[in-house]
Amino acid sequence: MRIHELAKELGVDSKELIEKLKKLNFPVKSHMSSVDEETAEVIKAEFTELKEKEIEENVIEVDFPITVKDLAVKLGKKPSELLADLIKRGKFYTINQNLNEEAAGAIAYQYQVNLKKKPLKEEVILKEETKEVKGRAPIVTFMGHIDHGKTSLLDYIRKSKITEKEAGGITQHIGAYQVHLDKGKITFLDTPGHETFTAMRARGANATDIVVLVVAADEGVKPQTVEAIDHARAAKVPIIVAINKMDKANADPDMVKQQLSKHDLAPEDWGGKTTAVGVSAVTGKGVDELLELILLQSDIMELKADYGRAALGIVVEARLSKGKGPLVTVLIQEGKLDVGDWCVCGLFYGKVRAMLDDHGRPINTVLPAYPAEILGLNGVPNPGDQIFVVPDEKSAKEIVERRREEAAKKKLVTPAHLKLEDLYQKVKEENLKQLKIILKADVGGTLEAVEAALGKIPSQEVELVITHKGVGAINSSDVLLAEVTDSIVVGFKVSIDAQTRELSRKKGIELRIYQIVYELIDDIKAALEGMLTPQIRRVFMGRARVKTVFKLSRFGIIAGCMVEKGKITRAAICQVMRGNEIVHEGKITSLKRFKEDVREVAQGYECGIGTGFDGIQEDDVIDVFSEEVIARKLK
Ligand code: GTP
Ligand code: MG
Image (cartoon, rainbow, N blue to C red):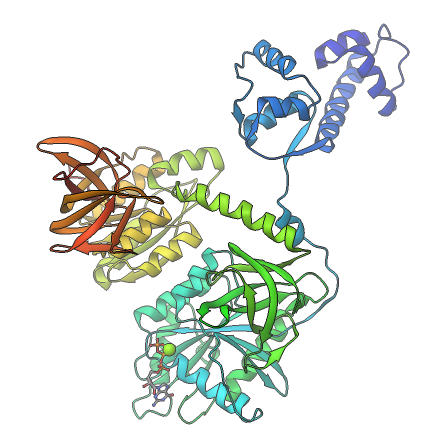
């Protein structure tokens, strides 16, 4: 085979092929030289590999979406040239058309360019090299059922371990604090419950190293204990069990241990691996042992932080103080935060003016795993938001401005979480291997029955995983857990309140409620086979009559209304009726009582409703609906 023939087959000109062959140690004289079949095959394979490697290395960074015009410039072509080239390949674009990452990447590849997304400024900052890695204190969160004694235990530890050393004791309320023991330090995060824990995770802040599961010895494992276990598991955080209220006469630690065994948390003396310790927040019995076990666990984990890099951490709590402005409690995870540092936090930024430690004392530096309250941000961020140090004010402004633009764009789209209807597609296209569900049922018996029936669905490709199961109504904790684990919430004969439904809609989490077990099983089966069709029904929620129409500069046209029936809720689906005619259909865009944004307005109250419909008139009627998935009828 001659070289020029080979070149033709490979889609390059002979000159290029000869050049490349030199690099591959296959010197040939000219395009008329010939090689035998076997060599030709080797050359083909090696040439293709080299070519791919070259493209891979030929990186150009851009922002997406990118217009055809800008892409041409990046590729070193005239826009008209690029357009003509694309037409030759049967692709018709206009010069100002926006291309997404995929489309632009495919075009660039044709020109031997590996198009990459330009990293954001903060990505560059956050990626900083490791500098000074050293050990740090563990960060511990207490979780458990209501009233099982989380706060009391933390209080006991605080009093005995901090106040005894620090005259004056705790002066500040702070959502995070550090305890110093002879054998080491522990940082405690005082979050109000597993919902906050998971909500923080949903923002990407996995701030806990160890979870202490508090179970009262007189009451044992309760629904929220189980939720806490599953939330901690989903976060892949080790669990230490504190069996609390051991001082009570009816304390029954054996019952608790037996119950724990059912949840794969069998304690060591029950043949399991879980560390469990009996404690009392009243007498303090067992608390020292608990602290030692925490330190032991943290030793095993060899927790480390980079003390040398630019600081980063997470917001534990934030509020507005009248005199001081935004007060933000942060937990530093890496690096040292100093007074005078410029930092970005969520959608805000600022220069750290002052910092207080967990005793309310002014400090100049905060180290990893230490909490601090900082002053100087220009707004109040959300718990779980990340805070990080940037080189100067200019970078801080730039990052925050871009984030605000993104946030404004994001408001318009619901996040894309897994829907049962898209399951099949995802399995095929994205190699999805698991369908995760959160299963709720009315009583324990039905829960087991549904679980057993689900277990019998034959599926080779996709494994059915139950992220959490429980008895009772679907609640916001289920929705948040679904969000971080990308699960679908499946309910059997259970209810759901409007607030949770709204949360799920906002987060784009699919909820499915069934009354008949076969329908539930059929739908999951159908989803796995790509045969599921959505069945949605609108349910009337309420009616409001327009009394007056006015314009607000920031919100556009607002209808001043009286709620005549049911209730109006924010973001509900609405229909504007004029007589018997539907003049507009869409979603409620804003709902206000006086100047306050509200979640819902009940019958008999006045409110301001934004519908995004500028033609709205006095005496129009606004009907609002919720959407419900209907269970299928048995055929
Ligand atoms: P939530 O924050 O509402 O979820 O509760 P919690 O888990 O923080 O419980 P909390 O510490 O508020 O305690 C609830 C009740 O149990 C209080 O009345 C405590 O005094 C009591 N309690 C807590 N620990 C113990 C204990 O070890 N022994 C006894 N006898 N009572 C306790
Ligand atoms: Mg509490």
